[in-house]
Length: 293
Image (cartoon, rainbow, N blue to C red):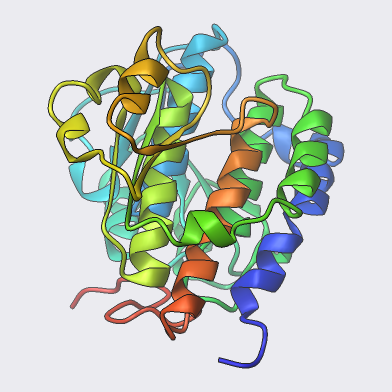
């Protein structure tokens, strides 16, 4: 490829988009769950991983019991005060079926005006300014998570500033790693899964993701020189030493907000794809939305 892929341009807009939803939170906040409510967060693929991050962070901040589910795995009959459904396209079969089948209040976050989810959900938050031309999601996912973090009372100013720094990190050597395993704790477990998905989608690369404490229960066996372990958030005691002993490269942006480290991971995925002659905007076997007959 000689032209700059859409995804690279979209990645670069994230700091400004995070500031936008944080500053404009008042126009969205009324529809989002209130503190103390029992909430389920649902999505598919990338959206599921953002739901995972939101659920863990909401509980850790004392906002209320929150569960996260893949769209196909939502437990029928379980009671919630609200169900937050994340879908960039607003057309994904599993989440539309969920909304149709549940009597629980639903809040949809989407990027696509006129999509079916807009008519089906009880409330819709439209982030069409964060939509993407690339099949691979980047800015819609992180902008959604920025909005959800703002709804929990977090100040995203530092995260946005860190994301600007993340856009300047040299990713060439990281893109040469043969294999990367991503790990996180609590809300950053969702980020670890999303980072792994970006490399699999964009570069057809072998990646794995785990909770950081679980990493030593087997997955560390594949660590070796030429491979990497990417840590989101604070690493558990002793983990850095254990990884270092394998000879694997440790990637840990301790000075960046974990979402900004995700921006670096997105850029690595694109760089790896381009180095392999792949089109990161159009991954093989993927489309913008999974719509089943």
